[in-house]
Length: 459
Image 1 (cartoon, rainbow, N blue to C red):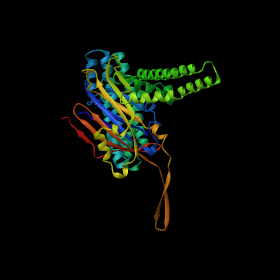
Image 2: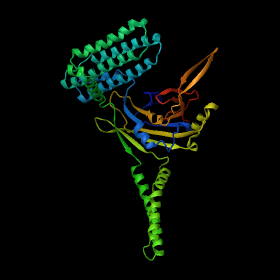
Image 3: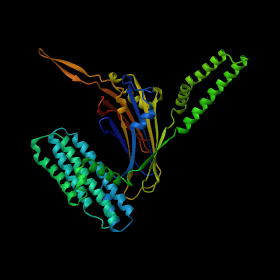
Image 4: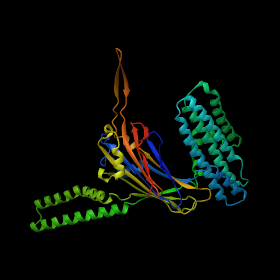
């Protein structure tokens, strides 16, 4: 059963992941309840600007069984099938390995106690080493295929070394776990020596941090070939916006011409009064034209989708899946009953005046089957909250406490809480959850799932 998973991404962003099967259709709705004291509303935050700058969609093939693509790639190379098939399955394995490693490293970094951190890191090294050995067990003899393998092997080796060095640098420090720390350092040295023995990178490239980093970014894009879909975003409002602008302009011009013709009939010749009247008429036209256009546009646009993302296979250019997107500020009466009920379950002190914003993504897979070795399509939507920060007050203060006869003070920061209701509707069930996003001016401090989350199955 498909579910949507919400988790923190970077300091000021969070992401939502969910999977799609062939010919499946589902819908993701997010309802943001934003406290009015944050100063974020339809006048200060433009939906189009927020979407273009802060909402990113990503879609790629996905497999729960990470070892299957490797087995399939060996089968393809040994039976001398198409080179494209080998590359696709090799890329899938490398892509899934990178995603899994990043997720496990992020979870390991959440362990703040050395007693938990170092054993988990040692297990992670063992698992990563085993997967890399599985990848390197078979090197294709064909020179064309070998270049694909070397690029992927070079990138994964460098990426895993960098990931574990970052883990050691940001993790807790303790002299009691020198053995586990040595295991991690030895693994990083092993991967460095492995790449040097195969001369994957020239000495000039290795000595320049910018060159080696940019080279690996290029190799990263190469292993996404055939796995990550190319995204084409279409603005669904473009022609409608032109039509609304034309109609409003036509109505205003007709009204102005009617007044002008009446004015000319009352004035037998051109006078200062006539010129002044015409100036006032055209001035009023320019003053109210933009306001009327905006009013008409918001009225007509309300409830209509604004964008469509077409995700194309980078090999065949076929559209694998589509994503139709809504984003708008809404009124309280526009909330679905089940969402409104969930928001009302908050404690009394947490109920405050709020502005509402609705994001909706309707997803559809257009193909009836995927390439061999692929089970599902995974879509990820990332929301960057940086646009919210600019409206937040700095609000640092002091907290005073009395300890006997001594008064002490601590610095405190102002934090804001956004309630977020997630509704994910698939053919099997409806997932309904409420999250509490706590943030300040520099980061999302915490994302908490509230206990009243429910899941309903269709009747």
